[in-house]
Length: 324
Image (tube, rainbow, N blue to C red; front, side):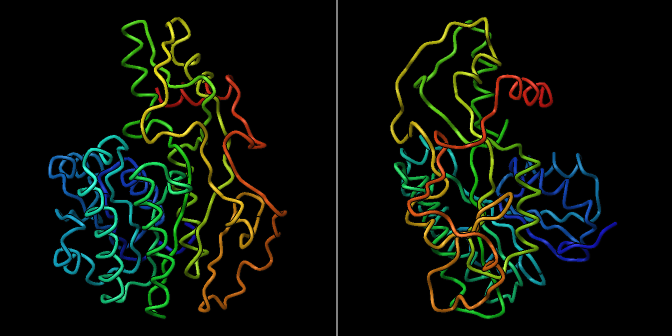
């Protein structure tokens, strides 16, 4: 087995029983870590996950990132933290803004402070394309999470913080794929807007990218993978070509297209073959690890509707068949 940044390390995943956490655990175990601590609120999900993996390298901690004392106990001796815990459902966050702020922002502050105080080596936060020019509270809280992580590097030289930002994850909890599979039984699919486009990434690819970023990070970067876009109508045709399509209109807090990299950010971004790295604009950034990357043209914007990579219906059919 090839040794990497996870080998022999003590890892902790906040929100570890979610879609990302479970896939990360499955892949990370192949890299032979010493321990993976699963930190989450769901006792039943933890029991299911424990039965599924049946691996004595897993440790299950019931806890909420709002609870700093519990985080303090859970991070004892941890080398790497993957921060995936969040309230992620856009309508739920819109209806319960206080709760979203307490978890996604205050909880992130607790993760930052505890990781520094416990001497964790690396902490990487899982962000979203919705953090870019946010039009809903969930996106705004993720934008705050990124800012907190990037700036946390000024407080310590021992703990490094970075973020990964990517788009919609295929068949994750809350995915439109799962919704449309249910609606297919009724003979009618609900589509908000036929012009809509989205970035699309398989969960396994997202996890592999996060692991590669843990390996490469020096602290302060926001990593963005180059991933394809898809038209929402193409996805609907693949999932349920026989169904009628009912246009419902864009929901509150929803965008027509998503953006992963803005014109302003591109001024201090480096481009590589398969990803971008947004570098910090703070005095502490003295590392030249990413300076060999290419500069982006003036006004560059990485958007789902102007992307150079697109998933065809054939591509989508293959993806759907693999997750069925």
